[in-house]
Amino acid sequence: MKIFGTISRGIKTPIIKEGDDLASIVCDSVINSTKKANIELQDKDVIAVTEAVVGISQGNYATIDQIAKDVNSKFGNEVVGLVFPILSRNRFSMLLKGIAKGVKKLIIQLSFPSDEVGNSLVDSETFYNSGVNPYSDVFTGDEFNKKFNHPTHTFTGINYIDLFKEYGGENTEIILSNRPETILNYTKNVICADIHSRNRTQNLIKKAGGEKVLTLCDILNKSVDGSGFNSTYGLLGSNKSTEERVKLFPENGQQLVDNIQKMILDRTGKKVEVMIYGDGAFKDPVGGIWELADPIVSPAYTSGLIGTPNELKLKFLSDNKFKDLRGQELIDAMKNEIKHKNSNLKGSMETQGTTPRRYVDLLGSLADLTSGSGDKGTPVVLIQNYFTNYAD
Image (cartoon, rainbow, N blue to C red; front, side, top):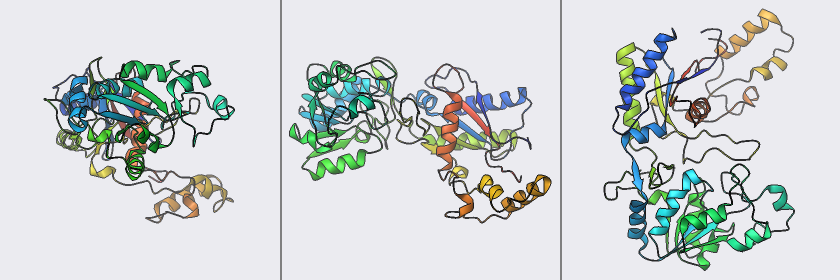
């Protein structure tokens, strides 16, 4: 292990269903796989569990009707605006059906040329050559389709204006504007459907005269008729399960990660760190899509994962402070520099170019890329040597 840096391994598990003892399944799968591969668990290894199987095992689901009932209880039978939903069938099709079912009429306001995570209604080259002003122009869905010759998504080949109109039904109208306040020309009752910019959108609409302005965090933040819920994020982080229901972002994840940590310690004597991960925080360079459609990368993690890296840039040291050294002399000097580095390198030249992101965001991105989102069958990821460095 001393000759390797970070190692990330996808761990195959049984297919996890509602009501399964996920903590035991994770522990058994990790321990059995390491034994078969002749791998030893070490203190500070990281076990990452995808949020999908956490939500599934918890039975954290909600139906279209339950979403509709909660929306109706908060707005009544009124005209409601839905501002800046992301262009995703997996993420938003069932939510849109439920929200539309719970109101008198739904006005959907889309941003353009793309949503907040980079899903495009129209390709950037076509858009920027069109003469459209993204800061002031407003379109109906039909006007936008006509202006851009019925544009389709780069990867899916779908026209999301038509698709969202279909999902919303006859009581749905679509407009396009990048100014959140535009929705107030149609209604003062609003659901801010964006993810990471939701608080800004909500504040702007309220300041401009919005009366009842909620975010998706406020929908299904409590159980409705026995539904699942997420007390912090509501509908944010949900995924399509069937044509009638969604799986919500996991609730009470902290208990799970703490239990797994304790079970591994009891069975192996090693204190590993454990986290739940959703979407990794990275951007696709071809489609321009930012992967993070969950509200956060990790909704729960053990205390040893709090913090950010404090690393030296080896390339910088080699090119500057140790530019005249070679071979073993350079190796020894580099190891000595690492062993005696300052406990807080923020702002120093020796750390420029490193990644000052949180451990859970970095590890969650690594785990998401390792497990994938398809048929790999590895909802658990074992990460080793992450907290070691060149001097260890």
